[in-house]
Image 1 (spheres, rainbow, N blue to C red):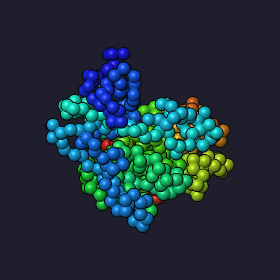
Image 2: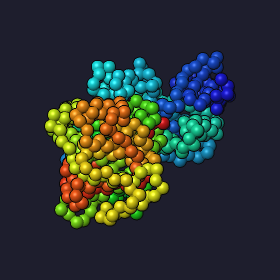
Image 3: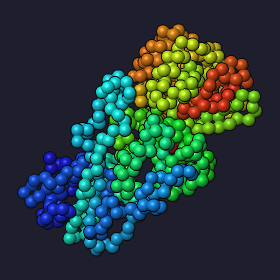
Image 4: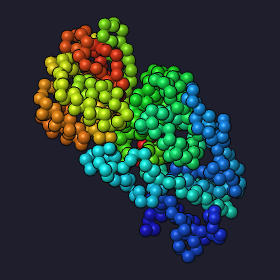
Length: 521
């Protein structure tokens, strides 16, 4: 209805490229439509599909010619040091108030048949996975580039007014300073080993075209050794970037986080100053799935790429993980934003590494194997309950206050989560929020195979919380020690999917909302 029209052009105010004569444009809360003089709709663009809005001189370069390419003009990324030979650069231009300009609106609507709510989902967990024939391929293309909508006017003020109006409508009620109206610079890490070796192809065929069409300058690096991502970040000036993109799995995010938190620009515990984008190409994709679920969006390469292009972000807590190596006297530190695992499921994670080529199925096979040879792990768990007003977290080598709760004896699972999902089909912490400063602890003590199996099966849809012996508590910090103070922990400790060296003690506390990730709101 008329009450939904935010802006409407008068007869003769605007023309549309590719169409003779004047048109009438109507900007609503959800769509921009263009009509002919008889009221027939010529074009409609849904605002949630808009990835760039910009001005250029009338008759300026089309989308494909807007970028400058370094190196060999579009070749695949170079091998060796992992740097790309064809980085792309976009620049904003300045215009005089009376210049003859045209307004360009770039959009990527769902492909024909894809539907606006995403593709069909898995029958058991409402997410794409490999367990059902009906489950979609997360690498399938669900969006396609629409022809740019180009509007012109004989009155420059009209074009400026429409640019501002569309920007405000795309921002909606969030009052977000939408960055789709300016050129941006981003650093991209692509893991050739991720996605069963498909990550590089996925990036060049699906991710890069959408980002470059949205005027995002890309420096692309293919990682070729462990910690490559961390090394590049430490040598970069991150304040010059509008975003950093990971095309891979949760392990790459962990490496990126180490580089960012140890970077001089983050000194003194300040927030990470650049947004992070995650294109899900790993075997788990826990963080990408959690971001998608929180915004009620389907998980997929297309959705994650749109999130980067649109530029809106979600705050995510960062964990400060301090640990004491076995036999050592000096504490070490690492950082995490997904999980910490100790006990049977940590063993499953690491022991199934040799089956990485099987994707997510490696976890199922590893769990079945470990159930046959069941182990129990002795230790002591201390935690500061989330409901307590006390925020005291002493250094790892200092005694804990009496306000901390404690558990001693045999454990089977201690799983700390910052996100709802550990993988696309694994939901250890259904009530977790990534930005509330809390840690969700999943604890299983001395239970039998039957209850353990029921709980593990329930992880697929979050119903493990209803299984006797499976307990979940929210805390602000926790500490895990060996059965006797100073003795080694009797199992591996896995942080964000990465194995720590043998430790006698590990402590985790939260830095609330210290990072921000691109998300499709």
